[in-house]
Length: 131
Image (tube, rainbow, N blue to C red):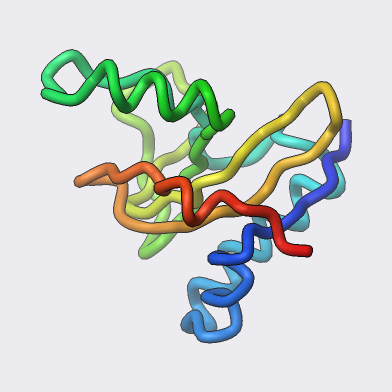
């Protein structure tokens, strides 16, 4: 199932200034989603409301992520790594792209990207859709 890919205002403003290497990885994810949806992407994709128990603000993160339909996908920056789970069909990386996902309407909205550890969810001001 293909998806429409949208950009948040924040990500749109940031996009043009990104390094070429980062753009290549983000564009590969974008292109994959437009053609195939989330299925088959080589990086791990996960809802961002699945929060480790040791996070002191676990409940706040879970609520924010669920309310705003936040997900993240590993995008291969700076490189792809095998998953720690030997049975996994995906790879991981140090960096992820954050996105809102609305499967009922068939779209994702790229909101931000950054280091997976520490993991920071995009705040509300980064979730507004580009006009």
